[in-house]
Amino acid sequence: MSHLFEPLTIRSLTLPNRIAVSPMCMYSSEDGFANDWHLVHLGSRAAGGAGLVLTEAAAVTPQGRISPRDLGIWRDEHIEFLARIVHFITQRGSTAGIQLAHAGRKASTPAPWEQRTATLSGAEGGWPIVAPSPIPFDEGCIVPQELSTGEIDAITAAFVDAARRSLLAGFQIAEIHAAHGYLLHQFLSPLSNQRTDQYGGSFENRTRLLRTVVTAVREVWPEHLPLWVRISATDWVEGGWDIEQSVELVRRLLPLGVDLIDCSSGGSAPHARIPLGAGYQTRFAERIRRETGGKTGSVGLITAPAQADHIIRSGQADLVLLARELLRDPYWPLRAARELGHPSPWPAQYVRAAPHNTPAYLPKS
Image 1: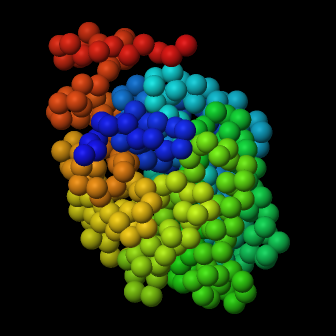
Image 2: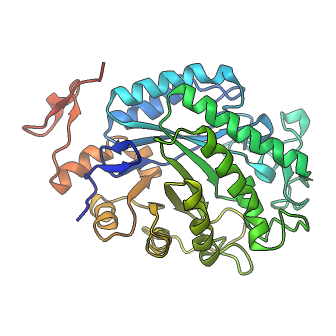
């Protein structure tokens, strides 16, 4: 029976445990560049024992940023500092992954702590936004421009170029962001996609762009490295995207070379009623895993070590992704190992403060 601290092998890559740092926007970049904040933020979670550290959503185009302060990977110059972060993460024995994203109609917004309008004006540093259909996300948001088929092709190419840059930076896992109401999710959901061409209407058409992006990225992402997709399993709105469609989508993604589905939910409708509670999204990961045979990750209000371990032991998911709990405690994995009775090495620099007989981990050369 698997448990939280058992290694997980996907293709040629073996994660040292089943704990991943979920992508979390930091709103701390300038012109898409990573900086010392990202190095310390991501590096401390690797030092804290997480088996996988995923970056926040990295925009594949400037227009695809959620905010002007988002991380980006749309130009070659972004590679150098990202590579420095990857080097530190891997030195600590963790694995570095990157999430590739385009915000679509939810782009050009302020950082959450700024008191401004829902969509930034040009004077505030904003830019024109795009979407499958000219439907604004919410009140106060501008109407997005409907993407032409040529522009859709260009966005697919941008994901491919971003994957190439990610490989040059040294990332070993790439995750395509198709959740939380961002562009690829916007194409999936009938709430945001009212097109009448080959990208709208039927399930086959609404899933076409994501399948195209996955296929194109898989062609440049090495065969021996894992490719993941994050989805919102449901919009939590009647008539929107739902778990039944998610299961069918995953059945079609797995043969295209997707290795794990990162199961989240929501984001398409600003006023959706979401039943928040401990592990409230885990049932989606469990159902997709059971009905498709694919690997899944569970995310959302996972806080206690015993809770996380139960998710793995009971076969609900293959790994857990933690977000806010790792903001509160970057060393949660080390605490969890102690509580669950699975010895886990501490950084050699910290071992003097560790429980008796804790093994020391020396940085890789």
